[in-house]
Image (cartoon, rainbow, N blue to C red; front, side):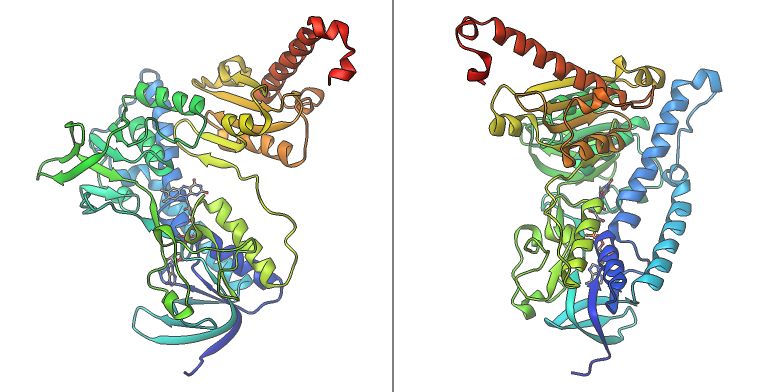
Length: 484
Ligand SMILES: Cc1cc2nc3c(=O)[nH]c(=O)nc-3n(C[C@H](O)[C@H](O)[C@H](O)COP(=O)(O)OP(=O)(O)OC[C@H]3O[C@@H](n4cnc5c(N)ncnc54)[C@H](O)[C@@H]3O)c2cc1C
C-alpha cells in the first residue's frame, strides 16, 4: 500500500479529547495528524452538546428572570417563540470558538485532514474525504477520540422532527407547548428543566424512581421540587412500551397503561461509542458495552500503540474528563510519566438548578468510614448572597470522617454549583481539613460562604460528640486517651 504521509501520531476526532491529545503531543515535539470527518472541528461538545445546550440554558434563565419581573418590565414572551431566537448567541459563540480551535489546531497540532478515518492495520489509517479521495497515513501511535452518538431504543421511532434525540432537539423551529422527555440521566434532566423554565409543559419518564440516580437523593429531591414547581412532571418506575406520532401529537404508551401526549418528544437514553466504522476488526480489537473501547491507566488499548480517550471509552462521558484523558494519553505517548491516577472527578449537571458533586457520596462514605461519619449542611437561604440572589432550593453538603476533620465529599445543588464545587474539590485533593473553611477568609457575601456554614455545623457536631463521650460513664472510669 502506498503511504501518502507519515507522522508520529494520528488523532482521530477533533472533540475535546482529540484536540487535547493533538496539542499536547505537538507541544512535546511529535509530528501529529488530526482527522475529522465533519466540516467544522470541535466535536459533540461544540456543535451538538455542551455549548449549544448551555447557550439555551442561559437564554432560559434570562427569560425566567424577566418573567419574574414581567410587570416591572412590561414583558411578555411571544407565543410562537423560535428556538433559534433563543439561541441567537449560539452562532457567535460557535464561530469564535471553532475559529479559535481551528487556528489553535493549525498552529499547535500539526496537520488537519478532513475525512472519515478507518484502520488498515495498527500503524496505517485510511482517510476518505467527502469527495471520495483516499489518503493513507502512517504513524507509530494513534489516539482514537471519535466520541459518541445518541442511542435510540428500538420502540422509539426517532424522526428528528416530532420525535427527537439530543442531536436534533435544538433544530426545532418553534418552542413546543408540551414535551415528553424519555430518560432521567444528565442530558434528559438538563433539557427537561431548561424547557420547563421556558414555559413548556414537560413530562419526564424513566424506569428509575427519581432522576439522576447517581447523585445524592437530597440534591435530586431539591431538583425535582424546582422542576415540579415550574410545572414539570416526573413519572418514575415506568417503562415505555411504545411511542408514535399520530399525525397530530406524539403518544407515549407506558407499561402501566398510561398514555402521554405531547407536541414533541425527546429521547435521551444513553449513548453509543462511535467505533463501528473504524474497522477495529483489522486490529483484532473487540468493543464492549455500547461499542466502547477498553483501555489501561495510560489510555492504551489492547493493541500496543493505539490509545483511546473521551466518550469512546465510556462513562463519565464529559468534555472535562475527555480533555484530561487526551492530555494523559499524549504524555504517555511522548514517554512522560503520568503523575497520578485521577480519582477525584467533579460531576457537573447543568440542569436548573445546577447539581454538582465531588468525592464520596453519603452511602460510599458510610461503607468506607462507618455510620458515624459527620455531615454538615448549609441551605442557601441562610447565606447572605443566596438571599440577595433569591436562590431557592440551594444546598451544600460536606461529608466528613467520624473525626469531623477529613473532607470526604461535597455535594451542591444551586445556581452556580458547578463552579462552587471546585472549592471543595481542591480541598479534597490537597488534604485540607474541614477547619480550613473556618480558619481562613472567604469573600463576603458569596455563595462560597455555604462552605463555612457547613463546616461550622460539622465542627459543632464534633464538639457535641466529644462532650457526650466525656460525660458517658465509661469515660469517667477510663482516661479519654485510652479509649481513642
Ligand atoms: C446535550 C449534551 C450536553 C452536554 N453537556 C456537557 C457539559 O455540560 N459538560 C461536559 O463536560 N460534557 C457535556 N457533554 C458531554 C460532552 O459533549 C462529551 O463528553 C464530549 O464532547 C466528548 O468528547 P470526545 O472528544 O470524546 O468526542 P466528541 O466531542 O464527540 O468528538 C468526536 C469527534 O470525532 C469525529 N469522528 C467520529 N468518527 C470519526 C471518524 N471515523 N473519522 C474522523 N472523525 C471522526 C466526530 O465527527 C467528532 O467531531 C454533553 C453532551 C451532550 C450530548
